[in-house]
Length: 356
Image 1 (cartoon, rainbow, N blue to C red):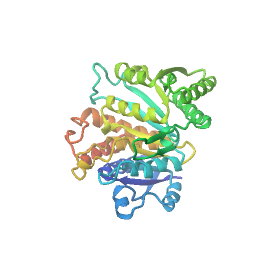
Image 2 (cartoon, one colour; image 1 turned 90 degrees about the vertical axis):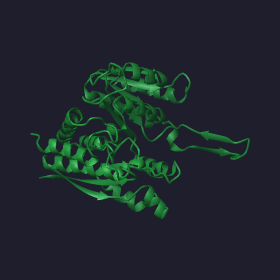
Image 3 (cartoon, rainbow, N blue to C red; image 1 turned 90 degrees about the horizontal axis):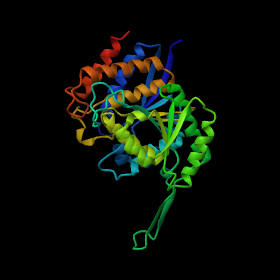
Image 4 (cartoon, rainbow, N blue to C red; image 1 turned 180 degrees about the horizontal axis):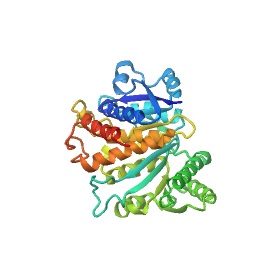
């Protein structure tokens, strides 16, 4: 019997719909080559919808999304909407509602893509950042006292629970074992200053490590991670860290792998509904120009298939992307590719269709 997956699609704002269209083009091509089918349901969420209706995400949408096998997201962000409204009201709300407690960021430099790091190539940049995705500073705990006065106080609290920390760390150990490369897991923290939160992280890390004797472990402060990621990225295999530090170092990682145009990620609930997206923004200045690179969104589709169990189809997407990056694109930056957004999608599709 042919498998069928229901994919919830949130094209979003700016160039989001353009790149999502190419991702779906590739997904349709690879599903035709494989023993499964995909059906899509579009959801009109984002800045334009908010401007027109004053609505972010309602209960009916959550109910519909909960019936999907995965969520495929383009981009959320609108120049006419105050920063924080869409991010908190849509992106974070989706992560928290579906308990997507893992943010997964593969960091891989592909052949044909330039890195700003001197004397580094694909053999040096191939690691994964696993970020706790539902706790830390992003929970929104805190508030103001005497706001707008000279005596104003602003408090933002980092919430870390043993349960939340442990399930993230355990996922990282399992992922490191499954990845089966250097089998080394690095905890990124700041134990010397954030003595309460990262004492919990470090103790939990050491406790869980006892169950994984085949995995090498080490620890580094976040500032050292940033330095070494630039100087010696080959040191890393899998990095696990909290919400804030993960947000920061994964953007640094995106730059060393070639830029936002090829950086994809996932928000994962291993036993629930997960969401897959390019990590770049909506790029409103490029909207309608058809020059934005869809590779990150296509790689997000690859991670999606891998996560729902279609590993062979996911590998076909990555193989096709490798060929496009190596043989076709002049550059991965918007407007410099030598092809339009749609043409890049067509190239990936062509390689999939012609694959064995």
